[in-house]
Image (cartoon, rainbow, N blue to C red; front, side, top):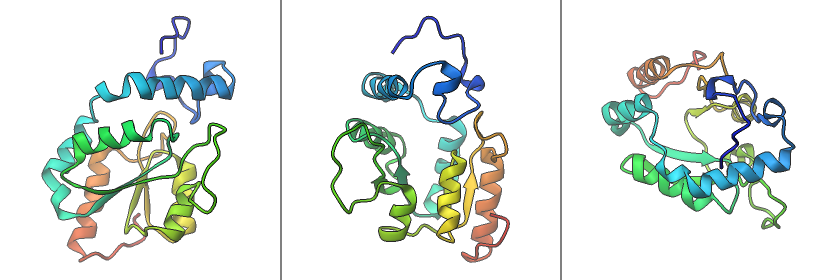
Length: 177
């Protein structure tokens, strides 16, 4: 969706979720996000460094996606992931972000719910500090991915180094994560 009055660039989005920075109500932000996912997300290119890492190292590990996305756009997110990273992905789990629809009772609503009842990854990577905290609450080693809203996170080179350390220790995950 186009917002001609918005002068922010991606690097200016220092909060997740950014509605306060954007000067809009949460509902308007979520609606705009869903519109973007439904109309433009499919044309997004993946992060070149992430794609390079998967091409070089992806086969050394087993990967699943744990995503927080609205149910109306989850099919597009899953398709995008499998189109770009499908040869390495073996699962797509969703903790749906509510848009007021009735969710099936007993299904996960957070990433922590997924970790506690569906899968237990050896390592979790995310760009949201709150999701990293959810993983750590489940004693899952977690790596914060650097983004404007997560400046203390790691770039892909540091993430790759941590995975190399993991691989060289026969699966042992130490406190470096």
